Image (cartoon, rainbow, N blue to C red; front, side, top):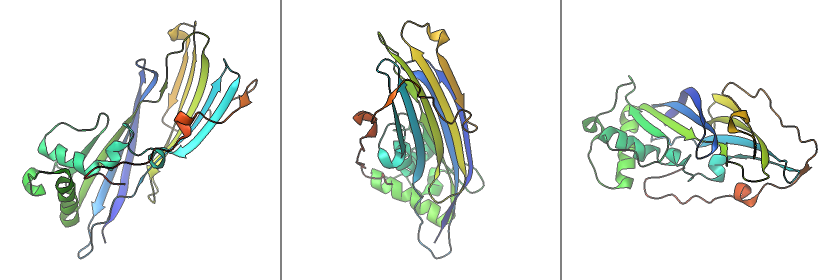
Length: 241
């Protein structure tokens, strides 16, 4: 049976001021597949996109915390669906067609790091399920690299009258069963009536400098249903865990 290795996990970020106040956060997973001589294809393990969200709502004097693997929580979100579509997006990369996903991208490379050609892949072929299987078949025969980029845009809505919100978001990301991980932290403090230039925004993709949020003067409440409710996966042809 073949095996996957997460060789590198690189990240970069930039400020975002619209449509939310937040950050463009990019995480690039450099994955290598090594086939076995007689074994079947080993499916890529699940993404572990773990987030801890801490929110202080100073208008209502409440705070809440939510902690989960967002890929288990909502794998078909616009941010994370690229992982479920990895083989389909890899096929589109080889074919030279535009990604279907709104954010992020996937590249399919040979073991030496060159772009796989359509001739090497064995295509072209029609149909999402067939295209995904063609990518699996290539990796099963030859091995290769999948480079999956996830583009997240964590942010807060621009505050309206009376609103004052403070949020700390901790990322702990990796691939289930593979050791390499990355931690990042975003702190936001926005208030209506205060110029945007005076709002606070801090982002670190090198650990958790703050690690926690002071909740003095607030009461803990459950997170909103729009945050905590699980979204069941609705995968289409060619998509998978």
